[in-house]
Length: 161
Length: 161
Image 1 (cartoon, rainbow over the protein chains, first blue to last red):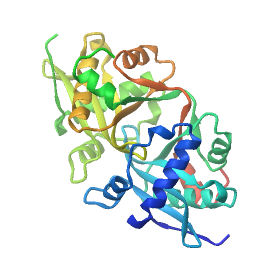
Image 2 (image 1 turned 90 degrees about the horizontal axis):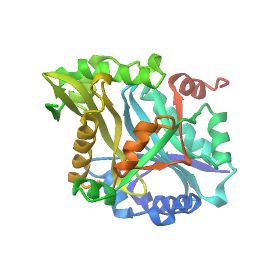
Image 3 (image 1 turned 180 degrees about the vertical axis):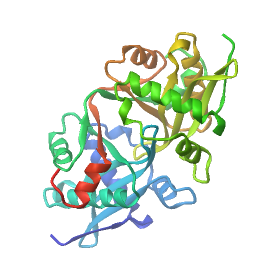
Image 4 (image 1 turned 120 degrees about the horizontal axis):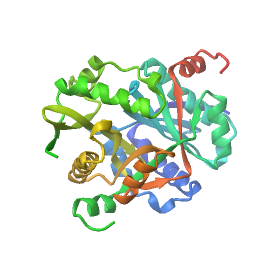
């Protein structure tokens, strides 16, 4: 396979948007995607950059991406979070996911961060095995907790949850 | 209880450091704290700020803190992550944790973020109940995955994991 991995530019955000939607469908949450292509362009390439992104390109078409940003650990200091690692279905099993992951880990190494992290669905055995094989450690006793916009508003307005 | 909640300043980082160590001990990982007070000062109040922090003060002594920073969701856009919410043992059960959490949620509301999030240990029933009561939703099917500095290096150097 003759693919390349490179830094994303703002013209890639249309393809990145499609990949985000594809992943949300796989994760059984297609209706949770509220972001728009314009927001991705603004947030990734505007004045205040909220993320960085690598894309995998095959025959001038984006077929995968790794999107990440800094986080802060009160144990380790500056760390990186891999928000999404996606390869479109047709192109899986060809080493593209590994190449994207590898580019991200090399970036982290060069930035000298003491940790990288991400989340994985507990039924996604394929991803879990991939991560374990490459040095990831699954922390089974932590649970992600979220509070959505509606609950934030209810809390602030003292409305019952 | 006559406590106040206010923005942290760099002189609070000594107390914040103690709170971080106290939480790590409670979480059964005391040896994982590698950060120093100087790093907290630099990362929170230097040129490039990696986090924001509120502290709770009682009789001129810091007895609790909430530390948070921005993250990016490819579903929601800009979100906030609450890294630590800590009240020192002697001062628990007095509403200080609620006051700190409340200040964080109000900050998120004013910033108009579409989501806030954090992680909780699955055996910490007290915290889980507190979060649920206040509008948090525990996502049971996601697992946190980390890769530490040593594994990052091994991966990049092609050494066996």
